[in-house]
Amino acid sequence: MLPSLTRLGAVASVRSLGRAHRPLTRLALHGVQCRRQLSTPPPQLNISELSTERYNNVSDATMDDLLHALENVVESLDNPAYEVEYHSGVLTLLLGDKGTYVINKQPPNKQIWLSSPFSGPKRYDYQEVDGTWVYSRDGQSLSDLLNRELSEALERPVDVTDVAN
Image 1 (spheres, rainbow, N blue to C red):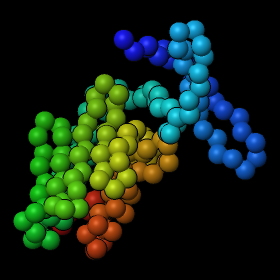
Image 2 (tube, rainbow, N blue to C red):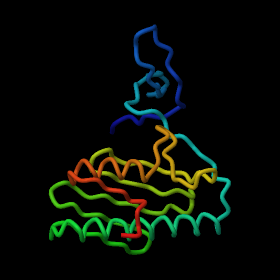
Image 3 (cartoon, rainbow, N blue to C red):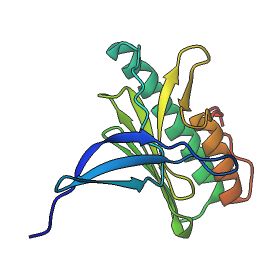
Image 4 (cartoon, helix red, strand yellow):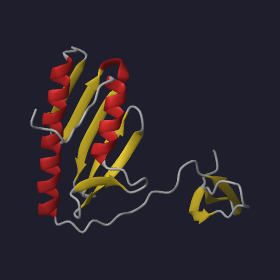
């Protein structure tokens, strides 16, 4: 039987100048402490101050706006490999061989989650001040990321905030 590892807690590493700061995790293996380097920083916990009702209103409006904007983009491209689907709070944008985006509501966390074929998974928190969904690790908004990535992938300007067209 293989010995089990027990996580004792994350410890921030202190490195000499010129080296990257990477978090470390302490592990105990039958009483012997080991340290391993994590490839990504530990998750950040953001406690939302939004009421459940406010979260549902803004997240529903955001998902509806994204759906309409992405439907307009897909229709204008007239590519049968591209498709937008929305079911049970999950928005899927299929871009053929370019990959698939999945955007969904996460009511327990009061977040919107994105899975991008280009930048990977991200969790967005609502910023009441300017009405945007922002990824806390890089400060970029959901709409800015989608505009940039889709414009590059589709080789034409995309603005997911433009739902009028």
